[in-house]
Length: 187
Image (cartoon, rainbow, N blue to C red):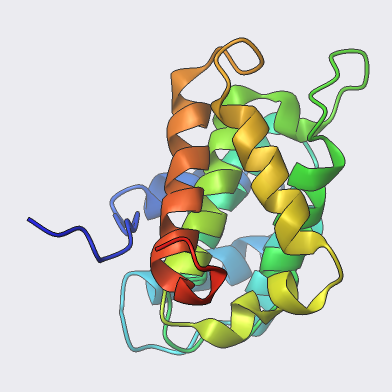
């Protein structure tokens, strides 16, 4: 058996729960945007609301809970055939690489194992998808891809990263990167 296809997380069963968790405030406009996006994510060929995507990208780092549910939706957004927003990948990549030294004295939202794992999952989906235009940021921003590979490799070391789910997600990112980018000379 030959392993040549990327590993993708595309389950939409959690969309309604994520939207419900993200829309607990009294902001009707935000509720409407995210509810619409949730419905659109369950339909493979429907257009996605750009305002809702922008809202998720701008606010995903608000809190640990907000980040987790936002990233669960963003992992699906990057797979959608009509997605063109490069800010998704850029925002997640910048946050993961800014904390690659994994220091405990400096709290960031990606210090949470669940959030860090979901961030790697979203990037893995972006790399593994056929949506090449949203991933170009990783290749065009100087050193970003190298920083991500370094951060993923650090998350593979059990002595540095004790949580299995983070190690699995980081390794999936690296696997998808190798499968999709044969020009690295690794595959």
